[in-house]
Length: 243
Image 1 (cartoon, one colour):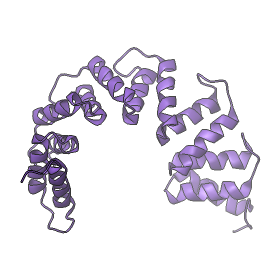
Image 2 (image 1 turned 135 degrees about the horizontal axis):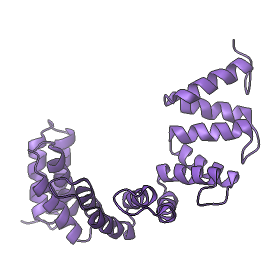
Image 3 (image 1 turned 90 degrees about the vertical axis):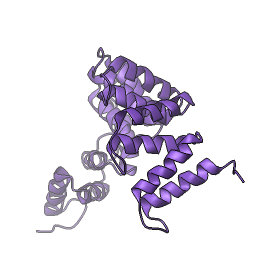
C-alpha cells in the first residue's frame, strides 16, 4: 500500500545509507533512494541528489542533472533550491556565467528568508562582484543576514561600526556585533572582543575577560591571539606573571 509519506521515508533511508546509520554506508544506494524520493517531489531529496551530482559524491558528476534538480526544487518554491541554482549561474557550473540572473535568484531566495542568499547579495553589491558596486546596498544585505544570525555578517557589521564605514563610528555597537559573532564561535570575532576588553573600547576595560577571549581565540589557532595571550601572561595582565 502506498504511503503518503513515502518520499520522506525514502529520503530517511537515503540518509541512513549515506551516513552508515544502522547499515553499511553505500553512496550509490543513497543516491537511488534520493532519486526515488525526488520523483515523488520530496524537495530535500531533490536538493541532496543535486548536490551529489554537482560534487560527484556517490554519482558521476553531472552539472546538467544537478541544475535540473535544483530548478525543480526552485519551481516548487524552495528557497534552498533557488539559492543553489543561483550559485550555479554565479559560478558557471555547466552553464555560462550570468551574475545578473544569479542575483535575481539570490533575491528570490532571500525574500523567503534564506540567509546564505542575503550574504551573497551583500557580497556582490559591497565588492562590485559581477555587478556594479553599491556599498550601501551591500551593507544593507549584510545587516539583514546579521540580524538573522549569520556570524560572518555580524563580524562585518561590527567592523563597519568600528571603522565608521557606511555607519557613524560607534565602538559600543561594534563590540555588540563582535560579541554576537564570538558567541557563535568565530575566532576573529573572539579576538576582537578580547582586544576591546583589553583596551576598553566600547566596553569597560577588563583584562580578565580579555584573557578569556584571547584564550578561546587562541584555542581556535588564531595566530595573533596566541601572541597577545602570551604577552598578557608575560605582563601579568588578567593573571599572575608567568615567565
